[in-house]
Length: 119
Image (cartoon, rainbow, N blue to C red):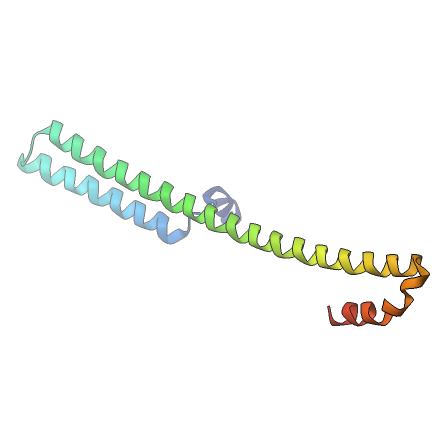
């Protein structure tokens, strides 16, 4: 059951969901206080609530988009490092093959082997 809830929440953690619930309860309580004592008109109250909810939604979306952005940047950095390693390995392999095909380059073979062992 808990795994299903976690999969539905996605990247939202329990603490952020709890914060949203607390803010929602505070907004409801604020609405009760304002309505009970007629502090401001109902139109102004709805404008205030709409602004608060809009700010919460935009903050949540901004947090999610930054999380996705950082995750993608880390993936791209790892991909670039793997690509560089593969290119270095391919260059060394190509040197070994060329040295094996051209028999006049056999004197370079120990140098290429030492490069491969260092890598």
